[in-house]
Each structure stands twice: as C-alpha cells, then as structure tokens.
Image 1: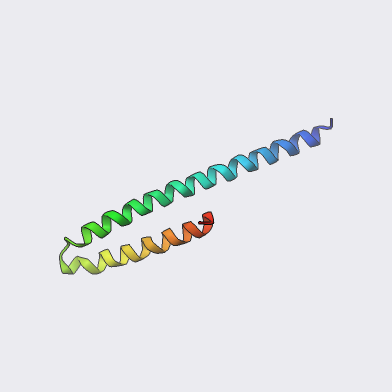
Image 2: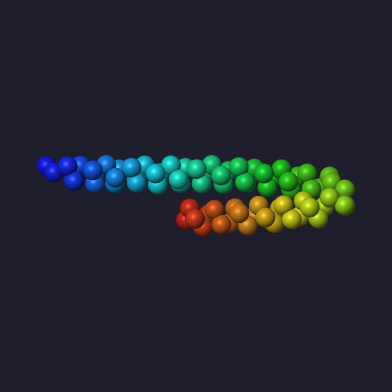
Length: 75
C-alpha cells in the first residue's frame, strides 16, 4: 500500500475527530448559554429598573446565540 493512502486515511480520521470535537464543544456551549439564560430570566425579576434594560439586552443576545447554535447543530 502506498504511503499516500495511509496519510489520506490519517487526514480523514483527523477530520472526523475534529468534527466530533467541534460538535461536542458546540453542544457544551449551548448548555452553558441555556443555563445562563435561565439565570438571567430569574434574576431579571429582581433587578432595579435602571438595570432592567441591560438584563433585557443580555437576554436578547443570549437567545439569539442559542438559536444560532441550534441551527449550526441542526436542531
């Protein structure tokens, strides 16, 4: 067998491993963002009015990130 085939197989294997790791990282990121959103929603009920707009912005940003991540994962 030619060494070219072996290297190609190694590259394909590494690509597969990289893709799996990338997906696992995205799933972990999604969990973190969902937890963060839940905490912000709970805490936003208790913040003063002057901080409410900041919490609302964070909530919108995190919701957008969650949706984008779900699309990337094919959910």
